[in-house]
Length: 116
Length: 115
Image (spheres, each protein chain N blue to C red):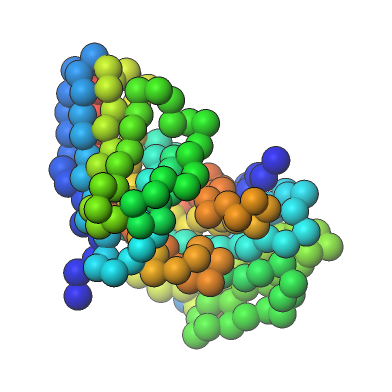
């Protein structure tokens, strides 16, 4: 079975603080993909990153960075110097590859509020 | 630049009625997905089309749910004999290629309230 756990339901920070969103996943597949999506108040999910299970290199994109650790089944997301516009619900998701599945298994999300 | 369009954006219906949602994907995207999201939860996969072929269905898609994509362009999701538990946001997404090599582009969703 595939499962994604985002233990932090809500996080509130003050602008310019760094914040890390945790994601732990479970899968029996040896090959899989991990994703992060952002859902702003408008409701439209926005893709942030995709990572395959063979690529454990950390990635940085501007103020965003991702730490993938296969040993602990974690794929954490850090926002550096947070801004009010970062306020949204963030979802971590897992996609199995077995059987050619095209589905995403989402966590419950972490609601981030960045206060001015 | 037209994104994924969903209609209606909001639907209020009485229990037992049928409802239909429409999704217009980004032009030339051959893959189309339906997800359901309830309050405080992440989206749950319902079904997926490649062109007009429905290739994957979740067990969540009971007999009361049916999805079609007749010409490989827009798609409809019909819920028959609605129940209060069907109240949710129904999200549509499209992709130009495989999920594992591309990204999903989501619409803003159709919110269903069953009274």
